[in-house]
Length: 202
Image 1: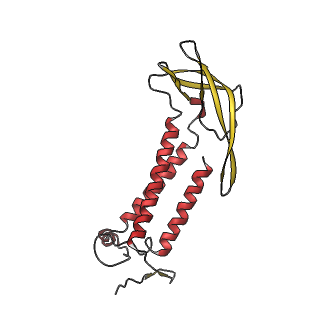
Image 2: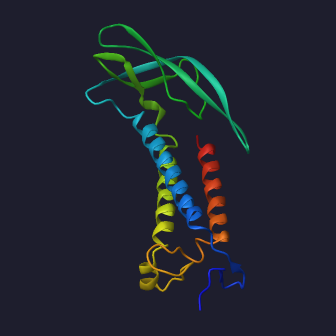
Image 3: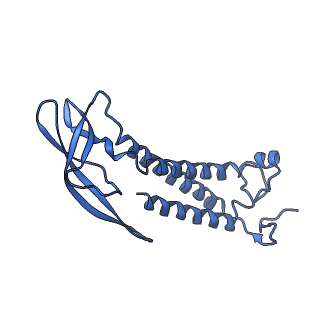
């Protein structure tokens, strides 16, 4: 006979269910952060791709700015280059390249893609995709975790797979493990680790 107090897991520890709103918020935060990471990774990837209809030439790093990105586990240095190249019109154009976690030196030669109609719209192709792939992977992982958590809450899925619901009824009833206090706490810890990793691969 089921009650709304909680379920006892294999370890013998009673798992108290969380309110529906807390379970929904848990799912929404996972998906929201996942979408933000995915968009950030895709933007970083796009920023180092050749411009459609653009020209490619060689540019020179003429100045370098430095800074530090600090988090709970220390600081990491980054470099931001100013790059100069000569457009097809013969004019020298200078633009600011993307932030790099690897050292950049004045005088370095880089590949540049630019729009002949607007040479200031230029990209540093030598920067590479960097950590874009990791950000995209983290984003997809967070979205899948959030979506999977939500899907596990439906009573019909429980019946099909023999899973244990967190509460009685039909529709979205939650899962006794994932949507318990312990399950949500573990999810919050995993989410915090994901955010820390995202900062580390900036």
